[in-house]
Length: 150
Image (cartoon, rainbow, N blue to C red; front, side, top):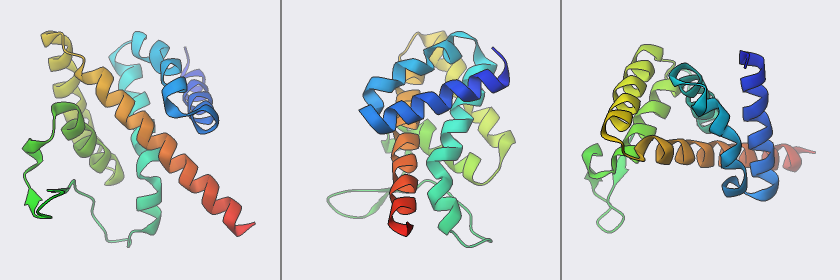
C-alpha cells in the first residue's frame, strides 16, 4: 500500500470507531501491521498525533509533554515503571510525538516493537489498541467541540 492508502485506512478506522466504537474498528488496522515495521510505526505515529491533538492545541506554545502517573488512591506520583509495558510505551511514545521528538519516538518504537516480536508477547498489539482507543476518543472530543460551536 502507498502512504496515502495507509492514511485512508487509518481515517476509515477512526471514522468507524467514532460511529460504532473503537472495538469494532480496531481490526481495520491489521493490514498496516501486516505490511511491516515501517507501516506499523507510521500508523502508531498517526494515532499518537491524533490522540495528542487536543492537548497540543490547548497547551502553551512553550509547553512540553511528558507522561505522569498518579496513584488513584493516594494521589501521589508514581514511577512510570508501575505501568504495564504496553501502557508505558503508549505514554512515552505519545509524549514523544506531542513534543515532535521523532528520534525518541522511533527509538521507543524500535525497542518496544522488536522486543515484543522477539519475545512473542502480545504487547505491541495491546499498545496499538490503546493508541487507537485514545485516537478515537480524541476524535470524538474534536467532533463534540465542533458541534458545540455550530
